[in-house]
Length: 289
Image (cartoon, rainbow, N blue to C red; front, side, top):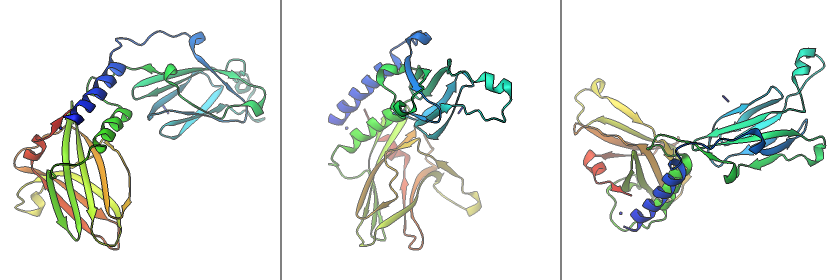
């Protein structure tokens, strides 16, 4: 509905993530009486905040209605009944049995038993999903949640760039460089830095990734396949002198007849742009962690 130190760091996180997410062979059985209770009043919305994106929410009765105002927030309230509603509809709304809220996220599920609170002034308007309420879900071995991808990306970002960039291009007082590429299971992490040696700040319109033909004989023969990151650490839209970010892709390959293109485009009116060509041999140099 609705490279070694970094390798060691990453391995530690990976093992921890794997153990916490995949170690269980089954989700423990829970009864309604085992669930954490939430109290809700008429006319007051309860916002349930998740540390990772919510996939869907199930409300077990018609007594509750809700929506997702943000990807990690579920908004729940008691169903409002107006004078124009039918008697049958009014009977369907039973404040003595508000039901169960089930929230399914990328790596866990949380469930709550909802009780009615008659004193509106004591009503809680928001809660955070706590670790003790998280039931781990089994996912395919190679799938990571946004929280896990963020952990990997932050640990890459904490490492100082010691070696020369794997690939670098300069144009219009702009520099684009790939510091390194890392691979974990079926994911590739591109560690990239953008430098601006001009006095004019750079407003990012788009950063585009694609796989294209190495040699183009006719413009109409060019085959371009867009690559969309499954995750990026920051969504920054402007930088003055430097900007470093991590872009995560599901692992991909391409033949020697093709190259990967990375284009940084600026918003109009300036419209400064810089483009980098990445050979597949560069991707093959990726570090594992």
